[in-house]
Image (cartoon, rainbow, N blue to C red; front, side, top):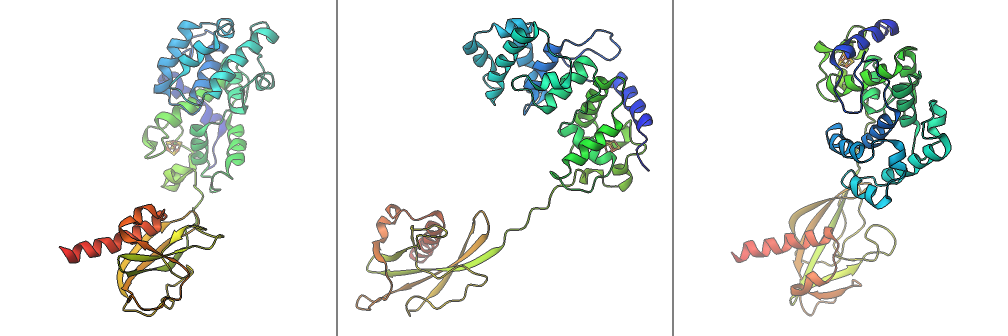
Length: 352
Ligand code: SF4
């Protein structure tokens, strides 16, 4: 069943009138008091990348210390940065003061009331401009944060995976945004996403817009928004040979180009689809198991084999005999240090 926009809007706004979250930067629905653009803007900047619970005490401190945009514009930058400490993403704090100063200097201390005007202010991105324009000035803008994306993806059962779906979700959000009460609608969508249409286990039975929700009708609303399938890392196999002689182990240098390029390593062939290769020297090789290692683009299973070389046996491998009791100083990469640890564990087991 397609979403009936007027019906959905009426149901959502009715729910918001009864259940809106009480937040210090909000005016309750039906209150009749116009929201203060300064408080709306400040809250939206603080809420970027930060949870509502974390923002509330900061918002209280900021609005007590700097109750107006003019007072914030006149703030000492060091004091403002100190007050922001702990909220993270410090570029936001620097933009905050730059924006407040621009509003005072260029706009007589009044925030522009259009989305475009807001967008031109320092540090005000597309989302913040849309949110402030809708909430503080009642403009019909399309306000899409992560909560709204999730609700829209479910309402319309959007199969397109994220992040490719983002434009489609914004276009669909536009189709359900009402001309009236745009600010309340935006906040209602945020509240719905935060309290009912939650990332896991959406509470469809309590949802005011369940009628006509395609995600709910699908029986598995929580699969939306669809995540892009991560490609499984391919697996490669290799062998590391621990060849020991007179308290020393043979180490080689890996080729300068390629994985672990130029680093010391145990001898071994190329890593491929199967670990099949002739050992570097003929000896009585014994298998000690394998170490698993994950590189950015593939996972590696490195089998470890060990043998003793006779003192008089010529070894046709370009390498160096490294004292085993000083192996910690060889600078082996983790992969080979773990292979060496397998050998040490075997020796310890035999000695025990
Ligand atoms: S019915 Fe369920 S999936 Fe659909 S919007 Fe409501 S909570 Fe989300």
